[in-house]
Image (cartoon, rainbow, N blue to C red; front, top):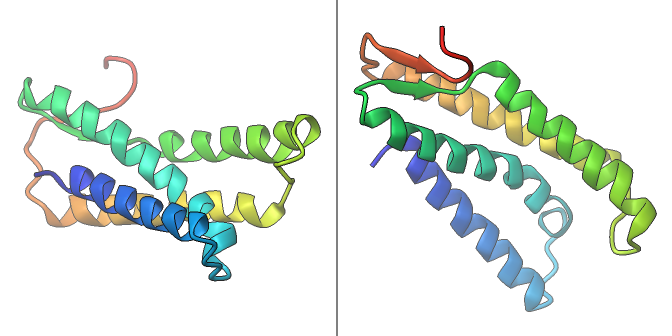
Length: 133
């Protein structure tokens, strides 16, 4: 099983545990407020990367996320969840710390991925996401 699939499963379990704690009204600050924000982008990126790696296996190539793929979700999540939704739904509040959690999660996942690829045996053919080169 690839590292990104393992990270997807681990992140899914962590997110589920956090949601179950919230449903049981177990409040552990700061997990209650920021765990979902910290884990959501790594979870989404690991799901995307797992799918792309599964597709790349057929061609015998390795898939690696590009830098912009770590940045764009932070921008989109920040604009949508912290800039737009608070004006239309009372459940959502704009919070700068949430944006920092999105960015931190993305940076942690990027660092972990870069580290895991640097220590693994990467085949000579590497598939970089984006337009065909």
